[in-house]
Structure formats: C-alpha cells, structure tokens
Image (cartoon, rainbow, N blue to C red):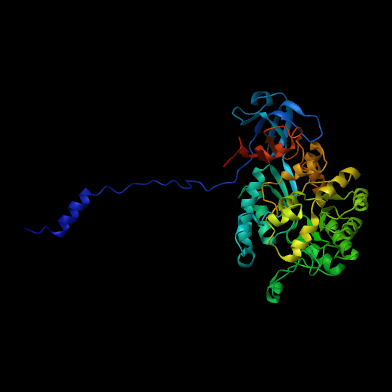
Length: 459
C-alpha cells in the first residue's frame, strides 16, 4: 500500500478540524463587581412601629433615598404621588410588622461560629482568618435583623478590617462599632492566660496597662489604631482560666484615667464588670455603660440610675450555656477548664434576677448578647429573655432600638424617622402581642440597601 505523505495527512486532518473560534472582547467588559448602592425605594408597611412605645401606624409608606429615610407617609403612596421616577422599586410589606433595625451592643463577631468548631485556630491562624470567620458571622447577624452591632473584643487587624469592608460594601453585614482589643490590667480578663511563658510573651500587649499614666497611653493608642469605643476589663471574667476571681482589678485611679482619656477624644467607654466593687467603681468613674453587671445589687443599680449609666445585661448567653448547674453540665461548656467552670456554675439565673431588679429600680437597659458565646444570628433571643425576666414587650423592643442608640451615642438610627439611617426590618407578626416574633425576620434593609426579602437573602 502506497504511503501518504505527511503533509498530505496533515492537510486532511486540517480540513476535518473545526474552524478556530473568533472572539471579540470589548474593553472593560465584563465589568468588575461593584458595591451595592442604595437606590430610592418605596416601602409599603401594613403596620409600622416608627419607634417602640409610639403609636403604631397602619397602611403607611416609607420613602428611602441615599441610604436615609426621606419621609414617612400615611397611606400606600405610589411613585407618582411621591414625586419619584416611574419604576422606583416598591417593597410590599403590607402583611408585615415593620420597625427599626435592631442593635446589639455587645458581640464578638470574629469569634466562634464555624471557627469555633475547628480546634486550635487561635494558635495556628492569623488575624485575617478571623476576619473571614467574622464575615460569615456578620451576615448571619444582619439577616437576623441586626443592622448595627458593637464588637467589644477582637484582634485589631481582624475587626477593623471587617468593619471597613462592610462599610465599603465588600461583604454584607451590620454596621460595626468596634473596640478592638479591650483595655486590661496585667493578668486581668483581657490579658493572656494559661499558656507557656514564650506564648504569653508573644501575645500583643498594647492594650494591657498598669498605673494611671500607662492606662491613658493604652486608651489613646487604642483610638489611634482604630477603636470607635473603648472596652475595659474592670473585673475578672468567668470564661478566662484565671483563678483571680471576678472582683475589681483596675484601681479607681486607673479607671478614672481611662474614662478621661476616652471622653477627651470623643469615645464612649464601657466595661466588662461582674463583681459589685468593680461595677460601682466604674460607675463613679463616669463609665457610659456596664457590660454583664452580674453581681450588681440594688445599691449598684440605683447608683447607675443616678449617674445615667447603661446596663447591658447579656442574659441569653447564660441561658444558652445553662442557667442551673445541671444544665451547665449538659451544655456546650461542660468541658471547659476547672476555674472557668467553677465561676460559671455560680451564675445560675442571676442575669434574670439582675434584669428584674433593674426594671424595678428604673436603671436604663440596652441590649447586648455577648454573641460568640451564644450563636451569632440568635441575638434577638435576648429580648425574649428580657420579657421572661419581667419587661413588657415594648420595654424589651426599646432595649434593641432607641435605648441601644442612646447608650452607644448613635443619634442617626434607632427609629424610623426622616433624616435617619434607612435601617428597616419586618417581622411576620406583632412582637408586642408575642415577643417571640422578633425571631421571625422576613425583611432587612440597612442604609437603604435590601439584604433580605420574603425571608430570603438578596444577593
């Protein structure tokens, strides 16, 4: 058989092969992703609570523009009647209960969540890992109806980067008021514990201070590096493994120096405090709020009321881990270190007793959950706990809206009112009739951008 020349074989193959695809690429196409932008929006609300305790409107229209509330109108108004362009998006919430976005003044958004199920991450991972973990937690929190959170303890690089990424629209989440690392005395609740000396010495210590002058330095440095609020550890804590107890650890002079330094630079100052001595000392030193306040008595709460100091009681995490010794030993923290377990077993239902006393005395209360201990996205359960402890549903709703805004010094949010941030949520039912409805969030708008509608995330 006669051989076919190689060039002829190649020609034959070339004839059989498909023609090369012709492509035309336009410059700049496709475009890069861009952040979501608040567009003018009409919201039709079947029932509208502009602020808890105020008259509930029926058949109302909210107009948002530029991320803020332009107007609140009676009746269902269309674009033409409102002077808006034809085709302006309209959100139908006529069968929903609409109210301001919730706020949580005590979370640890970079902690736990998925990373909490992965052992050893703190020792192995860089701060960037926890920023990414925080992004997952932040989205869950936003979709639960919380449009603002205050993070009170995280690595600076992780929380400040996450805060800024959310603000710039890189990732979805609530607006974050961030403290970064808390100010702590040496061996206090915010210092490192229970590791070999080499690891202890390697921990960042900019926020650890001793003596009034050093504490002024630490406070000013925290603000320099990005803190929106100053978080202080006045007393020992429950979950750190120290055996130093939960009473006052900063001196009165140190506490005063921190408060003066924070206030002189326009920052609120709040403190983790369990023992009565530390609570009273921080109140006298002019602190804006007390976190936890577990062992406050009636004298402490009256002192707080006198000074206008907010109580942020964090009830839900204690219910979550167990509010009786039996529940603790069946709960998620039964296996923690012995020192922490002993402190946890003493708490019991003290948080609810604290709320009952505060309601009776009239101490101002704002919502905080310590989420990261309890799961992110379950924050609204704190309001359910408050009602169980003796608040009315309206009082509980105030803690997470108008009260939280006042306690944090956030005058641009907390109610649905012209000129304020367009932070709006909708529930399936009336939370005044049934406080458990706060767990049924159907719609979330933050700064005029819709993140959840008809119970589903808006991509």
